[in-house]
Image 1 (tube, helix red, strand yellow):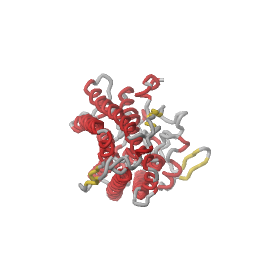
Image 2: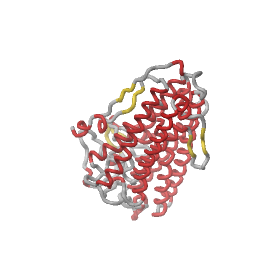
Image 3: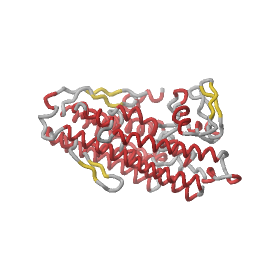
Image 4: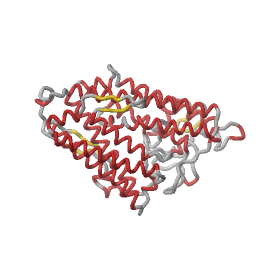
Length: 420
């Protein structure tokens, strides 16, 4: 259960424009331009992933599977930096579940280990395995799934029966199809799906290789089309940019809402502290590929580059302009310095997690009960994120904004409820 952390500051309408040498409109323009660049980079990397997926399907091999996995890793880098645009921008919130929903009941999609279990009262489709079943019953109606198409996944299967864990589309569905389940618990190693799960004839493992390939192709096509749509929303006349800039004070509040909510409730709480409390290796954002350390790192980087008003694109180009930092520095240079210091400290803490994971100490291993080194690493990130959120709250006050709600988390606000 999540709750909203209410934060109220005195409203100073007189500060909306003329009190600042740094125009709020310029800050909003930088924010929107960075969003456009991030979503375009996400689209470009997803198109490269699609090419790698189609190469795997056309000529399956261990090398082709590895190339597709590498393309998936690369695609996550720009996308995770867009998550700071959630929470405040309604258009992003309404869309985001299509591309990055988690956790998922992977048995909905494909075969799973026998210990996974079957249907539950909470999710009757938890072990549906649409790859193996060309028809199934949903809400009393027989569904023809003989052709696995983008429409079937997006319109029928995704969040079927209103169950959020019935994730049929997006990065994590693709991740599962490329890696399979991670059955190592707290041990070393990610999922180990064999390339022969996409082979033809007698070489096929896991059964239904043609349908598995059709699913992978359809879900990757959906990812590309969804990212193409969102990139367009941040173009010069795009709906997201227009909504952001209609009211300058509301636009600045949107920026801070995204920063505070991702920093506090979502990342520090739901994605990091909760997993440590439950000591559950499945409570990690990229659980099939063991890429969670990178997801955390690039989420944090997204928060930092929004505040600083700069983003390094995939081709090395720097997108930079008037920033929230500039706005805060005019009103309270000490607070701006504090905010920068806190963001840098958080990135250092998240960097330690990333470095440790890349050296062989995987994130799911860090979550094991009694693993002191792992707990210290994860809590370093959690504490940094919480600490920077307190400074974001002060920024809200200094800029004279009103009634900003930050996403909360029981793991931070009401820990006892996690075990109820």
